[in-house]
Length: 392
Image 1: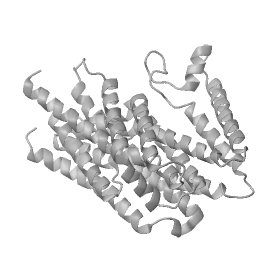
Image 2: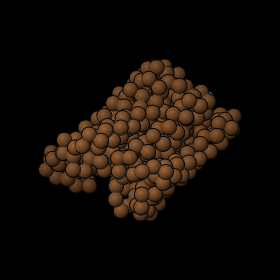
Image 3: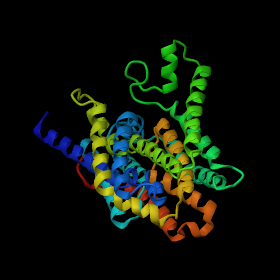
């Protein structure tokens, strides 16, 4: 490899690590534990540490789907050159850094997706309309579904006729059943991804839908029973443990989704380079997210936890359950999705269920939505113009 080409690759790698750091310091590092911090279940600094660890694990174990979509699925007719990758990553990271500095959560998925599409089209690529429709549908439905589910859950949890020992246990059981059907790296045949339910079926020599359903039900009932017993001990730590477990799962899902925004653009550059595997790239991105969570996330955690809603443990649980479910759907589909959008929508929904308009800040919401839409349009335009102005 020529020295000049190697230098460009190194710059692209540094840009990717910077993007991963920004993601860890911003959306991936802040949003999963913001409800827990808002409910005083964990301190800000400890939340940043835990979310970094789980974010790293999610990046390595679940990061391949979204990385592939970002790297090869948004523009047809060719792949981005190294210079284009650098432009994409610095546009996305720059806008995210602005969000961290101002305290407003810029949507990472919007900035990176916009810049990838803008750069790719300017280089003569073709639009992939089917993927755009899928991505757009997830983006538009996320606040509706996430906020709606959070509102419904938060409306039920405080009711006297629905004891939280049963309602929270039922929610935990649902999350457990979903976990049994989530794809994890290396759980499938050979070295492919697979689910826990599928792994049990292969072990028993019979992979059927009925067996998968039975395994899912067993896992769900086991988790529900454990939570039912824990909350029934009449201590104040039962809800706190549920809340922290949900935050950890959301952080894991954030790593699996958000790492693709940092390392996905690099994947086309690896074609023909046997010495660097996709797993190694995911590990590098995970490390960047880990460091970003530890060093830069506390500011955004505090902003989300205190500015969007006055949360208690029940409303926080109501926000995290739909956040986890939506995140895993996005990972399964390979859709780059913003965790700011997911968790903020859920926080708003859960806060509105109990406190009405007084529980959320309309001014903050308007600024946030404007930042989301504006960042996508600006990133797309900036990427397109940058390609026209720079030699590729």
